[in-house]
Image: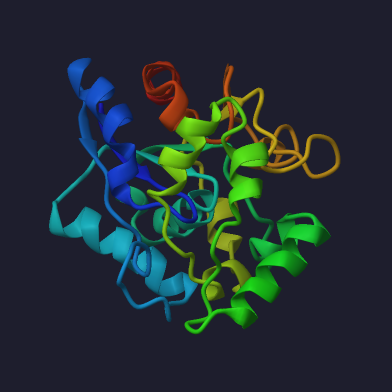
Length: 240
């Protein structure tokens, strides 16, 4: 398989390294681009369209076709728009505990009110308008299957997140008209979105229509805590 992994908020493509290594060892071609506005020391004044375009540009510049395009978390909103732009390049979409907004919605429309107000206040207090993940949220809700040392190690890898892409309302009419095959990977201990009314599955996955479901144990950040397990789930989600 030719796999392109699109990271979530507070991440860059570099954090995929252990997962990418496992997939490459299994014989797959793996790409891990960084979305515009993400990483340390970069301009955070980007919107969702610019973020999407950075991944479209990557696919085009590398002449990638027959791609299994995976989006994690916020990355789900990116792959929804990428497939609209270059559907001929995408063989399958894979959403790993990822947002699947309805037409006209933003990412912020799909998170609980307490997260919405937290991100807004953190952005307003930041000199560049970005949002820095609070450590306690990271430890308890995102990487809850890690011990303290691992939570601290991985937290140090994170960078602040541009706020505007979270707030942009997305026109997804074309996405919902496409028949590109799709899969949803659900980590069963993922509580980054609280289970129940705001949970990932089946709330997000159910919006995909016909889709393949792959489940694995782990947190929202199982890419750090069990990368080989996640790689196997990606193989299952992306296979023909």
